[in-house]
Image (cartoon, rainbow, N blue to C red; front, side, top):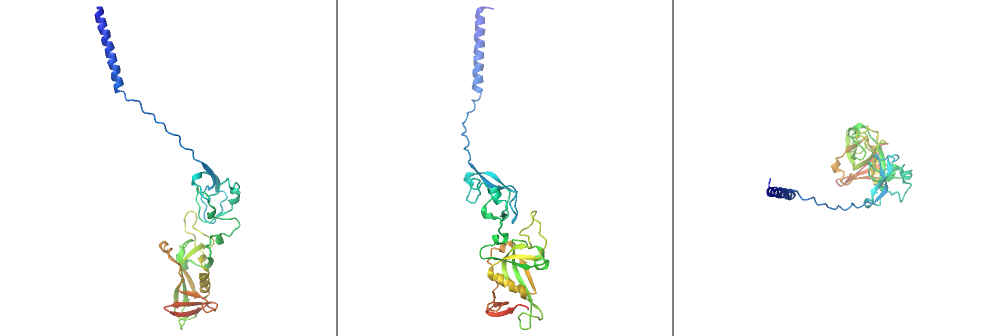
Length: 271
């Protein structure tokens, strides 16, 4: 083959190779842009006392508390910090839950009753009294009244010939207290852990003002029956009422002065 043809073929092959290389580079996508991601800022944490399990109201914390890391920015004054109270596990293990507590939440002193203190007196608001009254299934909404429910208290007594208390034909029914909170049924202060209804108790402990405590004490003496009437949960924000009853209005013990329609009548306790 003549040398000129060899030169021409070499030039052609070189041109074809160069064209292919250019075509490949032209169609190849550009390399992805590398973005520099700033490092995440470190989160400062503090060890706080937290619950490792649910604690029902009135139960001790023992066995269900531990120190846990918590973001420092989310800590409030109510938290128990290890740096402030390193003996916290031992100090608070016998404290009682003032309300139901749930696993994972930090322990707050405001939700605890200190060791050695009476639970019932600790949960009573200032100025209130806890008063117990006997109940039964037929006087407590068939046993469906539970702690933390609100009730009306209905008094039933015999009607005498003159319209007052005492023996006679017929009965008189009056609502003597309204919107009263039930603190406990027997020794139960809430539903059981599985949400089942508690059994019908024999005693209901009610949260009352001092005057309401006097009213129900006299009513227990003079009534043939006291009935607890369960209220709807939507009605519990209504103000508590005493149904126009006044205890010992004339200085006599064991009497209730009933004021209705401007007329005053007195009912004495049964002997």
